[in-house]
Image 1 (spheres, rainbow, N blue to C red):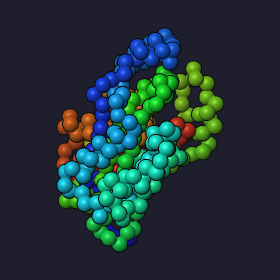
Image 2: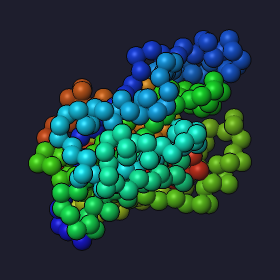
Image 3: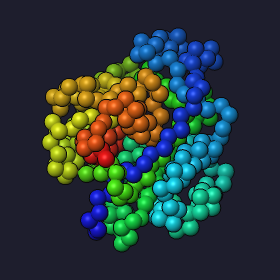
Image 4: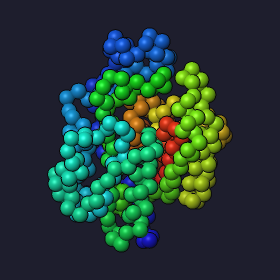
Length: 314
C-alpha cells in the first residue's frame, strides 16, 4: 500500500433548471390529496427534472465538466466506478465501452456497484480509495459517476418523505495539492434490518432503532480510524432521506442539529446516489466549509445500508 493521502480532487454536478411541481403528480393520480398535503407540510413542493436530455446526455454533461478544466488526463484514470440504484443507467448498449471511447480512457477499468441502495455512493468512494491506495502508480485517478433519472411518474414519489428529481454527479479521486483528503471511509449493512423495514407498516413512523445504532457505530469507528474527535467535525453532510433520521442521530450523538446539513431535502429532493455531492456543492456555495475543516458524509439506504466518509477540506 502506498502512503499517498488520496482524496476528492474535483467534483462536477448537473442539476436541471426546470422543476417538477407536485401538483402535476397529484393531477396524474400519482399522489393522493393526503400524500400531497404531507409533502407540503414538509415544504416539499417541487424537484429538478430533465425533460429534454437522456440519461446518457446528462452523464456526458457531467463528465465534460471534469475533462474541460484541463486538470484531468485520461491516461491517468485507472478506474471509473458507477454507483447506481435500479433504473438509473441505460441498459440498451455497453455504456462503459461508449464512455471509454468518448473520453479516450484507454487504460480505465469501469464497473458499477449496487447493493447498499441509497448508500451506494460511499461504497464506490471506499472502493476507489482502497484501489488507489493499494496501487503502484501514485498519480493514478479514479472517477465516481452517478446519475438519477426517473423514467415514470410513480418513480418520483418516495412515500410521504420525499420526491425524487433528476441529476448527475461525478468526482475525481486523486492526490492533487488542494484535494479534500479522505481520512476514513466505511460501509456497513445489518441484514436484520432488511425484513424489519420491508414489513413495517406505512403508517408507523418509528424507524428500526438498529438504523441509529448502526449509523452511530459506523461513524464512531470511522472517526477513530481518522484520528478525529466528534466535536472536531465542522459539518455533517447526510443524504436526503427523511430529516427526522438525521435529527434523531444528532440527539443520539448529542451534537447540535445545526451541524447536520439537511436543507437539500427540500431544495432538490432525494436524488439517491447523487445526494452527497449535490449537498457538498450546496454547502460549499454557502461558505459552510473552509480550508482545513473536517466534514463527514453520511448515508442511509433503505433496509439499513450505512456509509460514512470522514474528510478534511482542501
